[in-house]
Image (tube, rainbow over all chains, first blue to last red):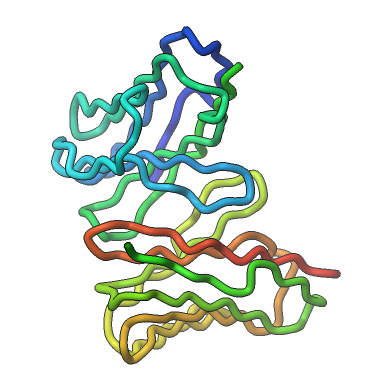
Length: 112
Length: 108
């Protein structure tokens, strides 16, 4: 299984809502990533988990809260988002940090 | 901080023409990866380069890593409509930074 799955595919939320994005891989990868991608822009790294520990936080606002419950799962908890947070959120995994990354299809988030 | 320049921003070619995109870093890199993202899709890994001066080929695609490990290029020979998409380099250092991308469109 060389697939990274993400749910939901689309999410519309208000600025006062709390929601979560989920990511799962069963390739035995020990590094997992969250990226944010705006239209016609490159993905921007948000967080990296390595061996289930948060190893990189790219100064992301606290309204985004990552969680890695186990080596196969990665969550991104969202609270009090702003309209400018609307974007495609991509999850990726790799065998180790710096290795080839496998990306999920992304969650298209719209904040109203 | 590290800056990743990728040129050109856009490339519009006739089918069968060649295409090249370049990435330049202000700092020496440990490695570089290349990804392709189709319209509406997600990035897909193409190759990783690690060694100074390294050249790798995948069918019509040729990847190069500069001698100083500060630049890289992706060259596609005889483009096909399936090559349409945005090509990104990804710099690997203590951080991971994507280049700005080159969007390739093809006239059939």
